[in-house]
Length: 384
Image (cartoon, rainbow, N blue to C red; front, side):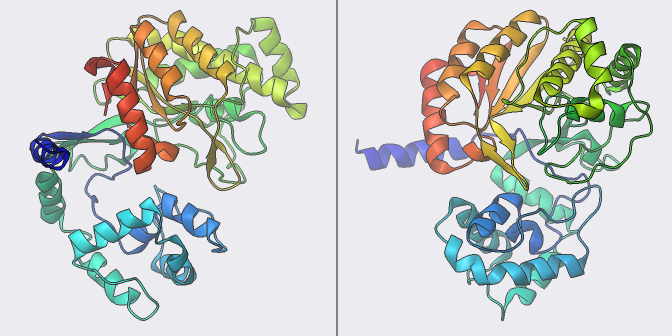
């Protein structure tokens, strides 16, 4: 049998398998694109366009708000002159596939035709039967998204949920007290959408943390507010810039007093202390939830770059080993770190790897990551 025939047989067999889309940001009751901007200005394509010279590198208005038509149309018009420069990218290849397969649009997107395409997409935006038919055609039986995007539960039969709320271990550009701010933002509130990446000025919080007792009270509130039974996992991020270590109560108290002058040392103390307190409390619910985290995408003014140090990989291994009754699962955005993460998953019973996230979401990287994981890991340790 030739390699071509074998590949064709494998593709045919794989096409019949039911699929699970582990990580999306779909909104219950509104699964479809709201307009051309939801496809053409998906954040990965925005990064392509920004690299090509388009002036705007920021995302459009983000959930729970929605871009107004005026904003969406202005950004589309701004982007169109730069589309010829990104026709080689895999992200734009995906855009062309979506437009052709779902909206019967095989033409290049141009200044003289994009409004017709936008109207066609908006016409199907609330056609829920069509959205479900697309998932059925692709054999996608379950799709993961944030619990904050559940809506009224209209698509509970299709969606499963993760808690993407407080990001205690994710750095933000130019900030050194992010862990405290994230805890303050959640303290006393119910789960909601996370702070966007590169969001600029921070909205004020209802409460401020000044003492160790308040840190512990806020962590307890967070853990007790998790809707166990409605979600399968957390969805958070661990930044490689943070030096994760054991922090004493005294060190944390002293760092709290220095918050106004916080720098990298205080950032590391805040994140390490809060994260360890959170994991210790969450481990008591280890049968109810998976600690799912992304790894290898570090902040830039608008988006992130792929960076991951060997030090952090070692610290993650220690962190997972300290909490054996809590299951950890990683979305990795670093091609070079995949082999190291595979070795951790081989030796840590409570650690597995999932998907091809952010900067690994390119065909060439996916092929390498998939091959390494299939070589190194049993199937229960990976979601492909």
